[in-house]
Amino acid sequence: MNKLIIFCVMIALVYSSHISIPYEFWHCGTESVKKQAKEMAETSCSNYTIALNHCCAVHDDCYTRQDGKDNCDAQFCDCFEKNSDEICKNEFTTLACAAVEIFGLPAYSAAAKREPRNKKILISPGLEALDTKYRQLYDVCPGNVITISSCAFAYNLCANGTNTNICRENLANCLEAINSTNTKCVRLLKFISDSLRLENVIVVVSDIVDEDALDIDFMKTQKNSNRENDDAAQLFVVLIIFGMVLFVICAGINNFDEENQGIIPADIAPRAIVVNPNKY
Image (cartoon, rainbow, N blue to C red; front, top):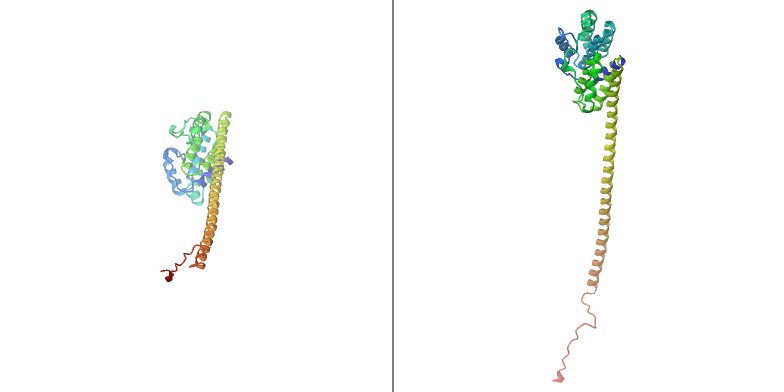
């Protein structure tokens, strides 16, 4: 029972906003008051409807197994108590608990003979790898079919969000909280729960590997970028030095030209032609 309370509290935290549950998946109340119970819960307990609905699913299965009316009702009221605030308690859960305790005997007696309310509720979570195994739960856990379906329903709602790791963990907790004395049922529940957690580990490891790969790629890119920057810097320095040398050479040539402007070496200067008039 403690596991059930923990699970319901967790899903109450996950679904902290109003969610309207389809009528066929609503488990609180007998057929005559089911609609009114749904409306009251969604009005007064909008942040807790998923958790409260799961409490009702567990209570239905407890009646089906004939685990004792007082025992089933005590678990039900405890589950409601742990998953409601003051407004919810005052306007719905306290009343629902009292109604079950006072008027629940006919429902408890009829539960021993009934089939699941609606075959449509026997759904599986959207997990392709575990779909076949999950559907087998309905055959090997006949006393928990409504709870198993409620676990799948809660998962499918959760999986519409972004963090499916939390959804898988919640589903594993939900299945582990199921009360069964059937050995095959217990084994299959454990197998699916362990598989869900293993998948979470694989996802986490995969994410870590991907992050490491990104880090390595980034380091390589950064290293290549640094290498390119170093090469560019070296080339820039060489060009500066070359420019300075060229400047010095050019400056020296200019100075040399200025200092020696108009001076022509004697060995290459044209000689003046002297005309001797006496010769003619």
